[in-house]
Length: 387
Ligand SMILES: Cc1ncc(COP(=O)(O)O)c(C=O)c1O
Image 1: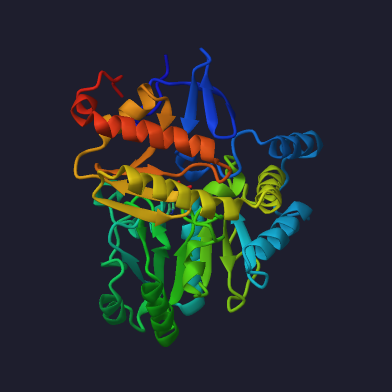
Image 2: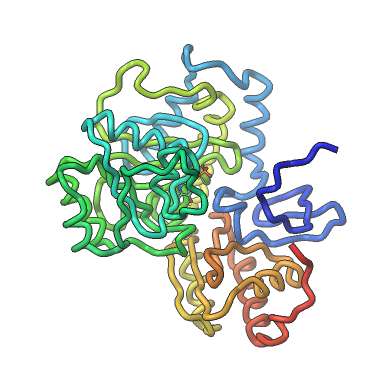
């Protein structure tokens, strides 16, 4: 039998159907999804409007290249510009978060002709050449991707940023809320300092909204809390609710020319249809407001339970840091309480549920968490399935 290249540690669970914030396996066991398939499920699994839009489009035309008019691209640009409050930014479409950041870095370098990039400690920007070079994890940077262009500065350290960003700097790339890095929220003051310093030096400010964007924080992009305007904003994950699509929103200060950027699959009919359906649902169902409201509800409940070292996040991007490894806790939540959660590092539980999640689901999680923490000793030795 041919083998899959074994890069993912797997849970012995096979979801076969899904709806809203739930997954079911073939035996009918139901799982609560507090992880959203890694922040991807924005409008809930198999939302009927999303399914209908994709089914209808599939029956008409699913793909043609970027050499013809694809009106769904314009519809997406218009609706994204309106809902995210960036009506004057241009949209370039691609297929993933890494690709979005790759194009953002290239565009910055085309724009000012420079090569040096400032990124931040614990950053994650993806696995393609430029994006991974700007990712602070040597374990995933292959020798061919390692370059001398990137400097990693401490996160939320304005003084270091003022000194480290110079007239040699091509781009500064930052997540408004670090995801893989452990749900670290960039402070308003820090983002404002970056904006000011980039203006002084001519560096391009790239906000990576791949994980923290698309309404998850309660605003469309989390950096909008700080009032700053980014030069380029990258996005992916929640954009297609599972259909692969990524993109960058580009400030009017950049000019396009034929061939400057390009892609075969980016902006195809199906991907755009998925993304338009997501935006329509987000708007009509008030999902950004729900993310803000439910984020507060989760945080209040977690605070009442206590037992953690630090609670961080915004909206439905929540990190609960404990002073012990959370592996057993997560396995107990998964195998005993049938609840999927995410993780960052060894000690941080990461919650990234669908933006549609409600009080009933939050209560199920809070009850399960409280239950697990009460029996901390039992929990560590809990009889859990091996991954
Ligand atoms: C902040 C951030 N940027 C970029 C990426 C890369 O996205 P993708 O896996 O779609 O290439 C991720 C993925 O986790 C991410 O969290």
